[in-house]
Image 1 (cartoon, rainbow, N blue to C red):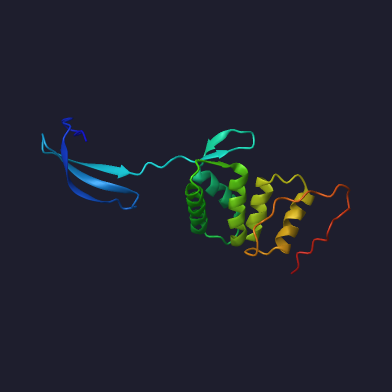
Image 2: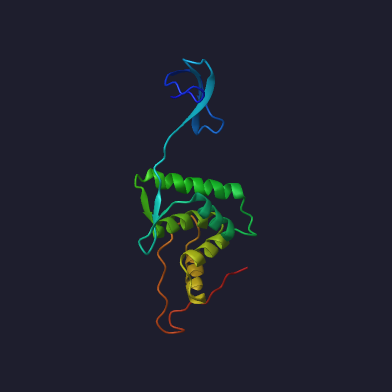
Length: 178
């Protein structure tokens, strides 16, 4: 490690401890030439995660973008921001645990929706409406009916159902109860 004062190449470690956040190691060093002390930080270099979009583009995973989407979906709902931050952390850890540096956007969206569904059903429908690009009320109705048929925590959400071919065919009455 080069000394920032005299540029000498040799130094010795005087003290070593975890940083306040635990994400780095803080080292106090002393230059063997000028005897001045300086601090260095050692961090683990994380491999970047990439989200593969529908059109094939690759975009670096952005936890702040994901958190922003979750905050929008839970706006005016009783979901603590700390819970959403923990959710983002959980999702990022799950992605890193896969061992792959790329994830298709569809898988990421399903992963988020699976967890969001257990936290808040309204936020789940809001997130799904943007993520799945609902074209009309029939798409939203299908998602709500699926949610009502499979309460959170009972089963993983299934892929989006196709709309009936003709108006009125296969429609179920939407009874939200209460």
